[in-house]
Length: 450
Picture 1 (tube, rainbow, N blue to C red):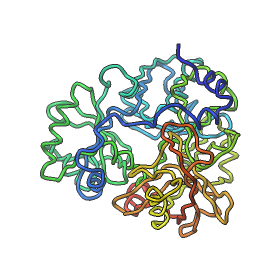
Picture 2 (cartoon, rainbow, N blue to C red):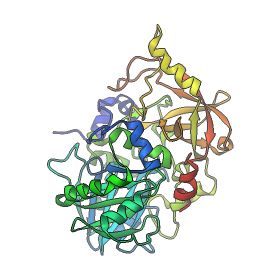
Picture 3 (tube, rainbow, N blue to C red):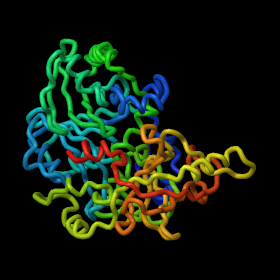
């Protein structure tokens, strides 16, 4: 019988002890790592058009029933005053103390039927409250291909880049109707109905296409054939995993589920396999020191105090004076090179810096210093080919969040944890400079602005 999260944490002694030494290997997207090479594949979504397969690594939670919308409204910080069928939004949830659980994309597919798609953290939280609360709802859960037996329920493809619109018009044989950011539209491709979400995952023009799995290969072949004249590039999991650095989305903040109201019952419900792992130089025995708020990650504009939801009162107090701001940190090239050079020198090297994405736990939390004092935390980090920089997304104290400020990122663990992805290494300090998030001007002006 599999352990619950509560049992696994009790055996380890604390949530921090379990997470820092979690036996799970790093998450691997179960699709082809590279079709050509990740550098050329990253360039495609900036220079031509890229096709990314999102069918296998995310969880879908289909929600239906008379109380589906009430459940979503009770758990989510978003406004649901206007959310008609055929629309989507970034769904965000917090705990009773206003600390972030996570986010995912919520599709209102048809009247009274919804699909919450993304990492499992916020999906687990919603499903728990739906099952334990007084809600007349039905859940159909389709896990990722890492845990599911059989094929996915839906295929999900991303077409991304400056030639995405031209490719869509060719493959559909008709002008693409104007669709606002995060709006949905239906198309016909290869004789089948295809649903779409208008957005740009890496800050470039894009369409997320989805439909029944049985139609997936037919649709994919039509896209590939039509894409030849536009320089279509197939993108594998290595490049795909780094796309969030350009759009400034932090994919896996540590969920605030380990303390507070209802946490004991939730952890008893949650399987230990879905706890996750904690990596990075920031260390504290108090798990709450790792918690974030929506404002730390730039989600403040999605918070709507037009309805009651879990954590509303606490979040109203936090909203009055946000402590941190999301920024991009561009790491000093000489310091990154020096850290990598230690692999070729005698002695204990620095923690290996993987390219293009250097995260080595599900929740990456590295210290950020100003004048030797803690000034925030660094999250996902990796190499952006299109900018030729190594960068991380960070939540920085507002006093130090202005572009141009110099900070230091502490890289590596002390002491080294027992996670499988952690080799014997020493900590190093890497200088970095604060920049806006997203770092790309195009993404800031044409993606986030919408």
